[in-house]
Image 1 (cartoon, rainbow, N blue to C red):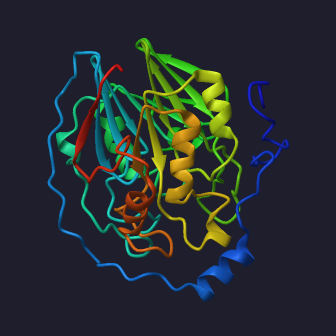
Image 2: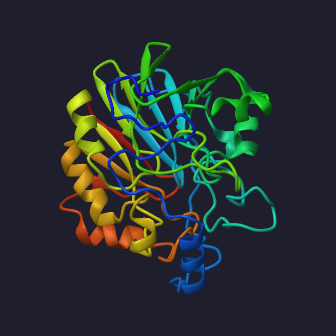
Length: 316
């Protein structure tokens, strides 16, 4: 399935991370859970001030609103795009168990502007949230983009139109080009479907502006490959959470220190931290990622937004 632009990552049955460590297996996950010593976190954090984004941004600036977790609203020149949208109370297939929301979304679902495109990086429950996607599909007017072999699940839920992209593939929506790029991660929604669908990041090119959404990823040489292929992004959305313990998480999740390295390698003019502050998915406390990023970032070019906050990225 590889098209030559990026390394081979499919063995005919399952996808894998080329030239990199693979996600830990079941026995290692069991070892983690049996030895886990999570940092304590409050059950609910009541510091979110919800905002209402404009219906459109008509100029050439990029307006970025952090909704929560990896859900970001990107607006530019009349085009509205959402990444990995989740408004559910749990990142789980069940309503009574699984990672529970600690902070509410920074934008109410009913306050969203019209959405032109939805990018889904992979099929984990904190990134592919079917109740949210069904709601967005019912509103109409948007195209859903998923990684290779991920469209079947959406179509089975009547979430359409949907296009799937392999690494190196691209799609044009209303003059905006969306490119699928590598990430180091894994996929699964159950016990038997591990790595049957792909995981990815996306580069979004709108006129002369580049936005890179990393999805979920460990640290690796794909950041240099992406910069070589597309050039330095105007904005990078980089994950910083779910990184402890490192022996278990490092193949699939970056630490804040690694996210800063990725920001430098990409040559991003600005980066915004994602994948933190809403669900506690690993052993670090809910606000440890942003504290650690504050301690290790070199300057304010790597930004930390609260749920509901927005930033405007200029052309230069």
